[in-house]
View 1: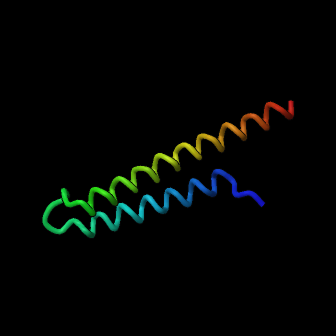
View 2 (view 1 turned 120 degrees about the horizontal axis):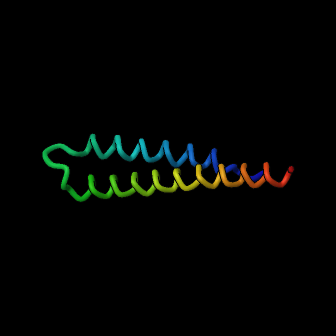
Length: 69
């Protein structure tokens, strides 16, 4: 059984939120520490992947709808 792109997008979006939360918690004195920047970069990558997967989901849905016609 394959995992749908929408389900994967939800998973990546949740990971992005988790990494953002951890980055906020790790920023004690300044936001320019290595760990904070690394966690923020991971969160950004996760959000970008989630957006691309949502876009893929809608393209697949549109292609299936056009194929049925």
